[in-house]
Length: 528
Ligand code: C2O
Ligand code: CU
Ligand code: CU
Image (cartoon, rainbow, N blue to C red; front, top):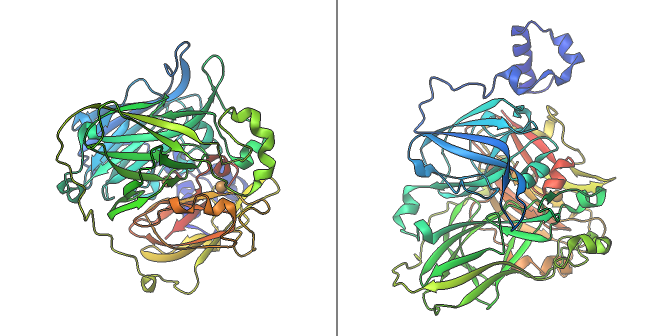
């Protein structure tokens, strides 16, 4: 028994009259119900906002013809401003939740789905027990009560299912939505708001002739991750956004299971990024294109004020090579339809969305020179400035591993224990020390995500920079600001500084290629 959870478990079991010996015989006994986590609203918590979310099977209209059966989260505001929940309409997406920093929220999640599930607040700094760890999954008919305060700065966060070995399937079926946080500093900037502040989630899916979602494939699909041949934006195929001749704030989220996008405007306009996973940058950054890995967010500033009414602009995903198992991807050509090349993560150039300038207005929005102040984390404040915690990423024997291990509940190892209130230097090593080149071997790109507080990227190092897989997307990386997910390419090592403040307990780290995650490329850290 080497961790706090086990200790808690022993206490619980003692109360329940179960001996430690029995526990050793039945290690599966630990679950949310025994720990009573999330089972009721606590009388000492005084929420500003109360929401109920319900997951249920629903038929929604995505295409002409038959409706599509999805797993839909619907929402209701029980206390507070009704605008906390929006976009609860006809799409398969979970509703958008909007809260302000400092607000306390209570969320009832009622599971009326034919599977155990749990929701995780991606990017939010919340107590371990409110974080949607798979061990807290609730069965059909049960309710989980979340209570937490919004500690994050303003930013585009999101939430999604996080069920053990079923996350990919659950998210694919619809269990994901935006979680947008505002704060005073951001509001003082008077950025485009209301209809001029547009959250856009990009996803890929496959549908059969009856318009039903198709998910599946064998081990090869899992190794590559799922790639769909139908792009949906905000749950809509062939998404078109009518805009006015003025500036917009667009919040892009890659909500796909595993597809990486290389986003660019078709007229060559560079992309102006104002925010990343964890909120505003210090100042806007201009990139020729955006590389957006699963779970990553970028907010962009797009100004249509000098465009003529009638102008059409297309946001495309450009062709790139992701390296790695590309040579093996040829057989997937059929499944990928017209969109895919032979490469697993590369696609032929395809349309993501269209923007049509449809009305003339006079706008006053000017992009502020300075957006925010980002205090850089300092190496000298890390407890281990000389010896980063290394996390090696590998795919071997048809499994996806972190430091050679795959996910297991309640399986904390020595190197996965982190003292609370420390700053840790960590590195994700995707074949860097093994000397794997960009295109060589079994290398796959891995979008690595850590729960809890946002981190900062210190550096990227890559073997074989000339490897095509790397250079074809590297100009689209944006490592500034606060991040919770970072793409680690084959042959690459990414070093980060990650704070573990305030909360003890389990916080996950995993690949956000959801097929990889479900194959076991996920572990818990125990902060104590
Ligand atoms: Cu968005 Cu643990 O994940
Ligand atoms: Cu997360
Ligand atoms: Cu991965």
